[in-house]
Length: 310
Image (tube, rainbow, N blue to C red; front, side):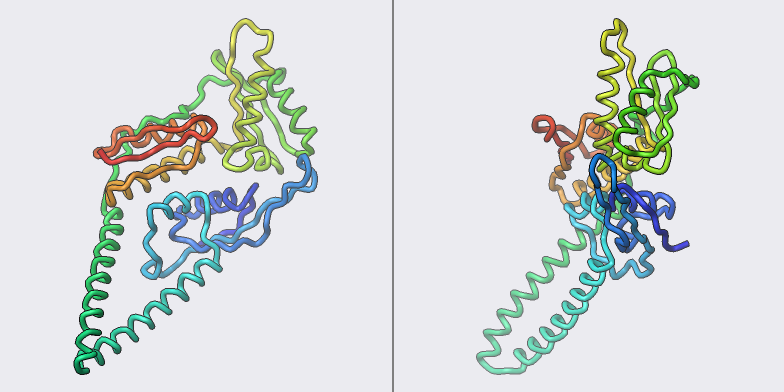
């Protein structure tokens, strides 16, 4: 199957779900937004986004991604209109190159004025040659291999969980979600270290929110309520149909893509602001990559990761 249609809380989420099933990267597909999402009010009247993700057959026509595009590729899918626009621009550029070649030929055949033009065109040729060299350097990141076999996973599997029908944390979350007007199924589990809550159902993607922001907020709130007036703190973890592991995989792919750009170009990569968990994923992914170092800068909630070449 070379295309899929999927729903998500927003366009980004729908695209990621389709890419996971197709086993493709975002630079290998063309995305068409079929339905825009609607937030509604407190969950009522909300509408999921729907996208069609189709494999691009001729990858040789695709432009190389710049450092900024590498970050945008994870969060901002290419639409069909964008793909058509770029294709049109490439065709226009080829026509201009052809016209420029004819003009240079005429200049060489002309007299004194042609000599001056010839010097100008010679400078343009040198500039164009330097541009091609930069482009070749930009493409070299495809040849850079990064071994992730020794990566330290941030979200380790939670073991020895047993069902907990009387889980107070799960009951609190169910009450909050129901008041949001969402239709989901919430199950509580526990072990000696934490209370684990699993969310599934028709509106489960709404619980995630953009880049997991709603899910993180609900988890923070549930932790506060669950550990209020208790002597022993017990962590509450909320997950929605395996979202956290998928998000970690997406961040790992982003980290690798940007690390290759840094090694290729020598320029630092500045990621968008992230929460502590997501920053930890980036640091852990690139911790043992030769020639790369990472650091965080800024203040919460605008703290971000910087990827640098050693």
